[in-house]
Image 1: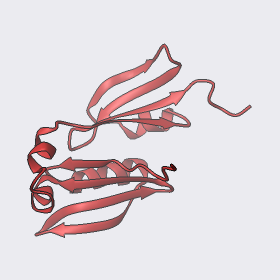
Image 2: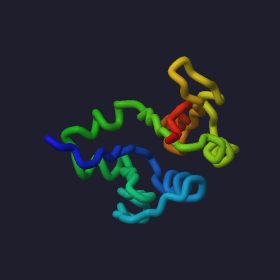
Image 3: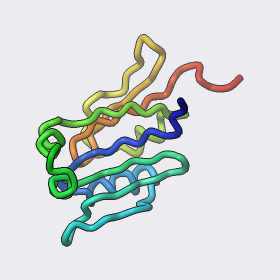
Length: 133
């Protein structure tokens, strides 16, 4: 059994602010977009081998009506993202809602947690001693 890739699908009322958040702050490009009326219904954002997907609640109701109530009632997602150096991510998250101020953990990570425009919590972490020797 071999897993080739895992891509989170995040849900939001509006996708445009989320696309802007990941594009302007972290350099992700929109590689796929599916309109839903005059708004975005679904997008794929990519940077190198990394990928995120966003779908609007309105699009999800049409796409998967049997589970739409679970999607909308499920709350927010929390993503933990390991990065090589934390400083650029701290700089990129200025003027964003910080929910976890910079801290060093007992397990050797220095972290900062912020909310994306949809309210999902994104924690960026630099692991101590992770550099190649």
